[in-house]
Image 1 (cartoon, protein in one colour):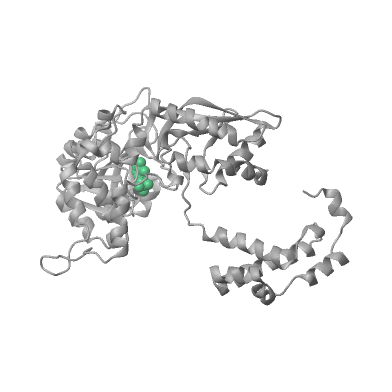
Image 2: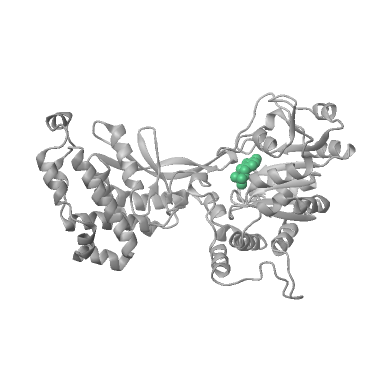
Length: 488
Ligand SMILES: *Cc1c(COP(=O)(O)O)cnc(C)c1O
């Protein structure tokens, strides 16, 4: 680091800086240098030349600024070395895989559900070879890309029919735009949810061209509130599962059975947006109950929408199940074509639904369910193994320990559930603890496979609930000290 003093002593550009700028080699010369030529072999001439140009330009700019002149290296080997680092960084895949030790199982910013091996294999199969995606092998004519998945989904949920789109937000949009365009949709004031990442029910309604009519109050909505609001412009009753919050205390909501009876008495459909619709009864695994599409349909819902990558544990997708005539209307909307699923997602979803057809093995095979139900003793044992290795990898000034914590489900699923878990915590023992912890968090994030933890209560927490690849984590711990030096 240069102090302000150093800078004021060297105003503008000095003669040494001028000399060093003219010492910068040409791109041609760099490409002919053995280190440059090695980069050309590996990365190709045009990309290498581009990056070398950027490196030279950055050095020239640094010298012109008059900053740290003697520290700016202008030798060919040093420039090629800088370019090699940039080129290697460019080669990193994006999005880069990480370790999710954040304590949130379905973390939207970390890609939500991790796919089971069966889904990954299915994606690979259809990625590397042509497939009968929209081709009927029986007749040799055009087929329906969704048919197999829709059949599975109907068997699993008891629905008459189903269709698929890109995500649940798209599912809600398509249903509203198809069934209630320029008409009114009734929704309880207690259910105007925001999911984060710009999904707000009122905004979705507006972009679907639907007039939203709120009924009831934030904490209490009664059947009569809906009954009184139904008029000749009403097209649909909507119930939204408050998947990421609870309203408690003096509350009342209209149950789906009552709402569907009211809707049907008035010749209207009831739509239920479940968000994170679990496809299996989570209570069976000792988890809090989450409403399922099966329950919503049994209660009389005409259309139910839910996500593929929340509790379902599959790829990003929006699943719509319900009445055949309504699904047929959705299929005819041109929006459906714009929101349709691609073959990779279809293949992954099909593989995940196949796992649900064998519920006995679901817990071991579906990573989301495995993470949700992982026994605490198992996580604690892992924390005891890992803590000594982390302690050994840390420089002085840090102390590691095992501590109990609680994981969240995340992604607007089971908002009140907190699952007992175990973490490795690291405390900074010296002064300036806060910045030392931030430096540590940054160092963990800068490892080859970045490790994502969180800072809370004066410690850095690594919740091990979702740590599948323990060997992979341990293998990169020796890099921590160097990462920490770079981070500070
Ligand atoms: C998560 C959620 C959505 C949005 O689903 P995406 O699959 O993220 O598009 C919509 N409604 C509810 C109630 C949700 O929980």
